[in-house]
Image 1 (spheres, rainbow, N blue to C red):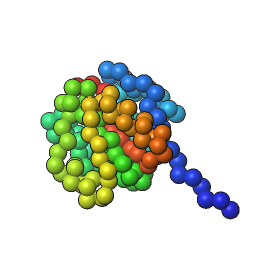
Image 2 (spheres, helix red, strand yellow):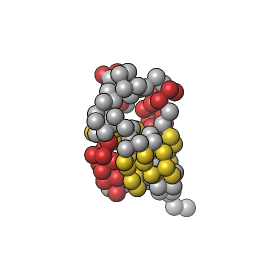
Image 3 (cartoon, rainbow, N blue to C red):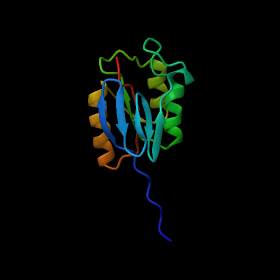
Image 4 (cartoon, rainbow, N blue to C red):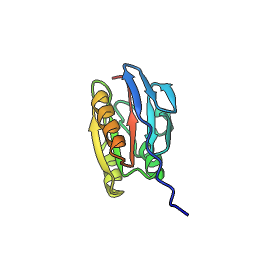
Length: 127
């Protein structure tokens, strides 16, 4: 019996203001992506907002899908904050973290997918 290969993360096919297209998932505004899949990112689930920032709860799902590297998009104009608590949560779980404005975050994420990394990400397509 051969070992099953780890699933790769879906590639982001396109991104523009307010819209992303993700391989095998489709079109949407904001996404959570991980090895083997992803879904729309609903900010109200954990209280994420531009001022409140990305909450640790939003990252928890990525860790549950065995991400070793996480890319956090801060929005097109970097208006989405990332609180110290979120960074500490990821660091405490030994996750390699990258934060970028959205278009750079997408480029980096796709590069990591191409390298076969267990990469996840949170992507915001406005502000």
